[in-house]
Image (cartoon, rainbow, N blue to C red; front, side, top):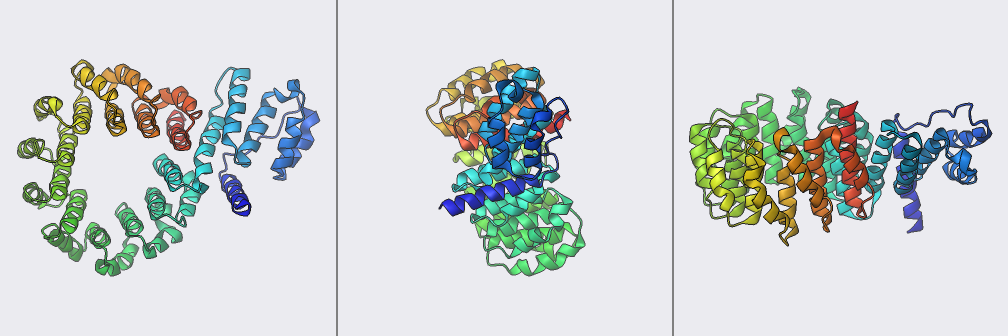
Length: 452
């Protein structure tokens, strides 16, 4: 076990070295007495570097460049929590944020979890890397393609699909041979983000894959590249009696904006399978019209909550079509999770916060963490006029006792506040939960890039 742990630390250090931004500047002539420590660092002798830094007297240790060297050394050693403590001391000394260094610390909290024993923690790390949308994440995402968890490998593939270089990566394309359908689907979905005809030969054999989601994704790639057999296959799947085939095909057709899409969605909205009706409700969000509004109004009263949630989310996108009226009526919804999504849709329409304030307060006080997390996500739809009120509610949820609620609140805070959320996100790096810290680190990477 000790050998395995040491290998993970070595892998972390190696991964951090891949990022060009994480390089310690040469120490200035103001501190010539620690030039030997700098040489240890340059030679990648990080344990020795830290040992020597810890021997310095307080005055020398407080020199900003010296503290920066210690922070970067701790990051190299896979100790982001200790690096954050040192960063806080640096910020106090210089009385300002060092955005470049804060970015490195934030990344440290994400990368450390890519080698965690727990699948949930690795999932949090790769979700953060995927959402970062930075080419600098690519070495880590490529590494994630070899993770033991299919879910984690799929997250890594989704992240690589955000970049042309990622989609062309041999490792990304080799993932089409992965044993997990989720991974193959993620790779194929990635191919639909470009018009690279070289992927046709890769997608065609997968039209016969035993997994429905893979066959549908392969057909979507071919349809995207104007191959009629792909489009024909999607339409055939969209009418199939198998609900899994039908649901997957509907989602693919929504992305392709097929000319037959409205009719397909209308038929699906009356299907006896809830998953099919839910897919139809989601699809109508891309086709705002008076007729679609009538259908979504009906689906907003569906017997099953997941369908009503999908309808509420789609109605939130129907600007200028009087979708606020059915959503306002749905504020008395009996299912708390559905009500949270209704609130999010109303906020997306710019509804005054006062209209939904009492419902938000009630949901924040619910015992079920899933409901509190849902209202945290709903608050992420608040526009500028409602930003301050939404921020106050999110500050409560960021202190929730359950990590999943804090994670949802952190993401929404970053979404509505942008670079203004930096202080809140930095404070969340001190959270007791690893996944929350990784989420805060990922959100910081995003908002700091907005400020650059």
